[in-house]
Length: 139
Image (cartoon, rainbow, N blue to C red):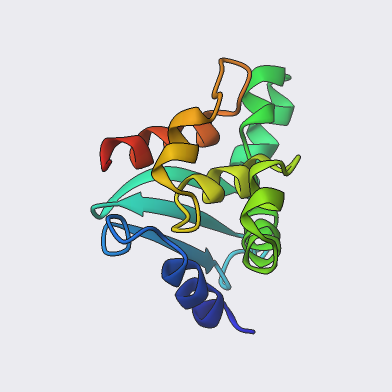
């Protein structure tokens, strides 16, 4: 499946309150010397999360272990979207991949009662906390 098909499938899994507000994008810079790109999530047209090769490289270069945990490149983002689209909501919520768990927070299959019962703590990745807060704001 090409990216536009994955994006359409992803958007169809968003809860109704967010289906028109949240979007995901991936681009590659073909003219760049290394052909890398980036991926990002928007809320109401504003970028709220970004993933890219150079962000990840910078976190590694500065030896910032905390930042490196919450930095992803576009290939990891695409792989997480692909895996998320094929798993059920329980698998997504208990995934070791932070991106997949974050996507699950926005999922229409996650009911309000279960969303309220989720235990999101300080050790969770920033993207998981962000998506949880976005979803809680529309309840």
